Image (tube, rainbow, N blue to C red):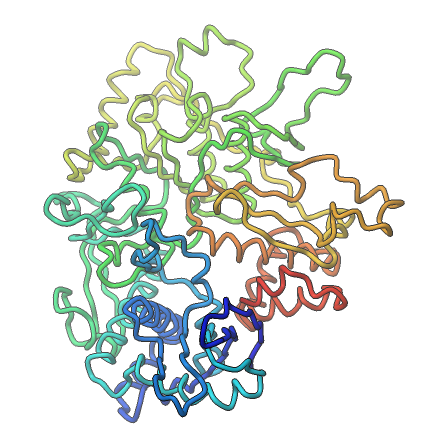
Length: 614
């Protein structure tokens, strides 16, 4: 199919015009795998993981060919009217390269996620690309079909060399690596673990803004502590894909065995001096929810999919959130009759501690089973409070997380991994302690127990162990299920425009035509926007989001959810998200975009849609 946007380029001497088309192609997966039965059966064994890996490999390979300049065709032959054809990825416009001259290397982050321009569906691989055509005469869409499709196919055959063994070897190494990570991740739940870090992994990154691994040396490969209950080995069977794995792994027949550190369910502390690798370890666990490409260094560091980073986000917007488990009896401002109800807390500018409480509660509401907390980016008064401060500030409205982590685990089976460097009170609560010293991990659980016992001697002790209250979790603290109010959803019932603001740090939803003074809306008071932040979501501090493309896709999904919510009055937010997930599994992003497009007023095919189709 071709969506045609004809943009006339600057006409130079030979009066050539530039047309830009979007080409969608598809190919049977079987014809990629070729005739070899071994390839086919190995690929089938990987199931859905194989398909995601195939699409991801195709996207990465095409991009590297585009950067190397292998995706353009120049014809100097005077008999041929078309001068040149160039294929490029749809998101080329999104890449702002860092170098001034604009030929900086482009590459995707090392995480494997489903994409909307290369995707597999019903045994086919689908590809959408932009084709730029320079020609002497203006091309109509039919002429373009006639003249450009063959060269396009030829070019793609040259890029994806499926007959070449070397290419297929790379492809299958990619597939095997992804399938292995997925199988490894599914082993975690049966072991009652929330994360696994394999021996020999390179955890640190090249720089603060890069996702590439640091060279080793100086990077220290991870090694699990020798004499610890947390050091285990895991065996994973991945069938005949095991032939394509790198030789460095321990493979017996079809089973791969990993040794490494298993982070068990419960409360785990990661302690150590500054700059000894605590936050790096936590970050590895946080990104264990994604599959990584071979050569990332953290390929076999996996964590359960429901592990969520929780941090303070002062200034964030909170609506109708039950944070009473952490925050109660807030002061009432003078002149306000009703006390602030923390069971239904709303704020347009929350403080560090209330925002972190809201983040914790929202994670629980969405079904997180592990919370990852880093002391560095948390509110100090939300994390812990010691005895002296308790005696000075009697009427404190915050119950710190420190008192709640055990109750959360006992009642809801929600584990916590906390990075701590400054407050020793935390040593009273954990089930396991990992100590990092000069980038080497040690098991310090016993030592922490004895310190906790020593230091609480002669103090008021709670429940005979340590000086920390271990509060049970009350039923009243459990999150209230929430959903978008229908009157709010109606604001986004049609013509929604999704855009990225602030260089990729925020996403905004608004109706096409809002603020352009449409005459038919003036009598409707709903459209008077009293607020410049209306429809805006600030996302710069959501730790596990992968940049602006994923943020934009999330914005599109939010628009879709708001339109679906009134049709499913019985579903809370979590139910709506499950509904979204099953739709994405069925038809991918295309289904979502198609649904949104049907609510768009056909007379003015909005500018955001041409943008979105790309």
